[in-house]
Length: 91
Image (cartoon, rainbow, N blue to C red; front, side, top):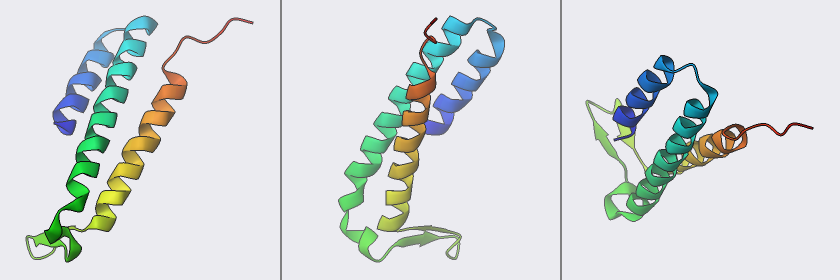
């Protein structure tokens, strides 16, 4: 979901040069990131994450700590986009 949403937003943002469209895309990205953070938080309390889940010989290893990092990155990215996704004030 997250990958497809970002690809769609990158392609649509590259097409339009108008500032108001890019602001709308930034707001949509904030919504996508907050939903992804909520999904990661909801999956955080599964019992098998206490030991971790590894596939491909440990190449992809998922634990509760990695979920905390994902949630942190989602929230920080949405805050950064929130600070830059509005029209600047003319003083």
